[in-house]
Structure formats: C-alpha cells, structure tokens
Image 1 (cartoon, rainbow, N blue to C red):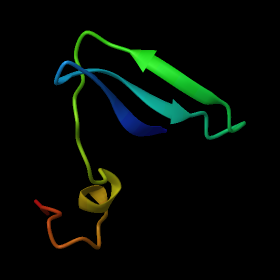
Image 2 (cartoon, helix red, strand yellow):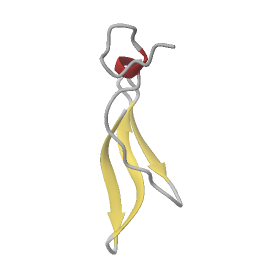
Image 3 (spheres, helix red, strand yellow):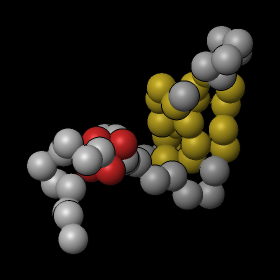
Image 4 (tube, rainbow, N blue to C red):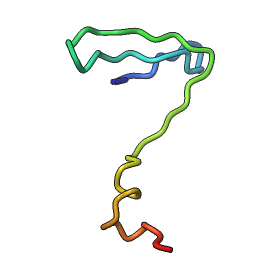
Length: 54
C-alpha cells in the first residue's frame, strides 16, 4: 500500500509504502506515477445507485 509519493525537483519519481501482508516498508521508483482514489467495488454492487440494469 503506497503511503507517500516520492518527489524530486518538483516531479513525482515513485512511492513509499508497505507490504500489507508482512508490514515491510518498500520503495518503488517509477518513470511515471498515476494518482487515483476511490473504490471500484461500490459501483459494481447491485445495490448501488450507479448500477445500470438492462
């Protein structure tokens, strides 16, 4: 799970986080970083108001 974005000279270069299975810290270096939030499970639920029924 990523907890922080690594920034160098104003540009995102990776992330810092931890392994949710064992708690080990990890550092991920990347050429590109995509930031997103939210959940995909709620809209896929039959009980959610955004669910489209055919």
